Amino acid sequence: MNKKPLTILLIIFFLITASISFLFSPFFKVREFSIHSRQEIDKKALQRALLELYDYNILLLDKDIIKSKLERFSFISSIEIKKTLPSKVHIIIDERTPIAWIDNKKSRIIFSADGIILNEVTDDRIIDLPELAGVAYKFDNNKLKFPDYTDVLFSALLKIDQNLLHKINKILYTDDGIYKLYLDTNTGVNLGTKENIEKKFNILASILQKIESENKKADYIDLKVVKHPVIKLKSE
Image (cartoon, rainbow, N blue to C red; front, side):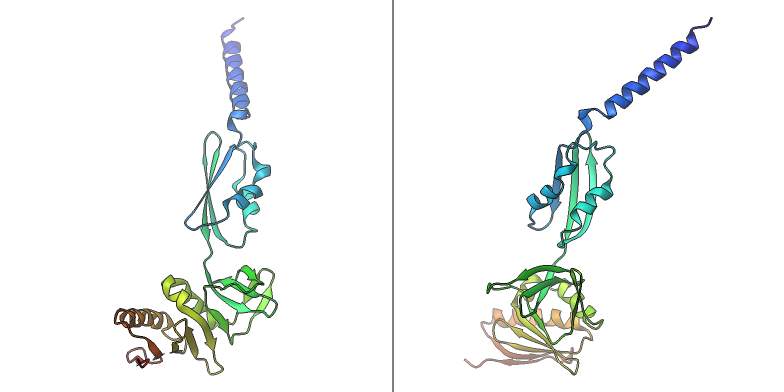
């Protein structure tokens, strides 16, 4: 009897068994979730949400399971997951950026450009973001739904310099479709309609920078006509 084929089969069986045993060994158990983000976030809270996934086999751990554990955190915009064998999982987080807040009587609700509620403030702390007023909204689970005409405004607020955003105390939308700003320097700004609103914010930033460099203060800025801004300075 030719024993060579049998020997080969035994070797193959042994290699397969050894490989399976190795793959399912403690060597490949998840021992660390390393969380990366560009902003300060509560990483410990995220890691606590993943506690039950420790000791899972890293090769068999479904990335969608990790995402489902983390997507309940409203500040997370997107999640990228990379596995580093034998036991480390890297989680790259993109955060939603807060752009404004609304007064809901019981609380002040901070939200992102896509309407996700990021925080509810019930005390009298200062919120370093503009209040949005004059705009209708409704609740949809953990989200605020605004009229479509606000999309351009929210997109602009997401893109403007953060220093400018923090200088705006209030954004008021009037019945005739005009946006008015009230700055922390008691400066009133008439942005006009939503047309070219991102460009108007950029012009406003340049105007404020120039005025501040000259140690002056603006009483009123009118940007209804983009090419012809009107600036009224405060008297000394």
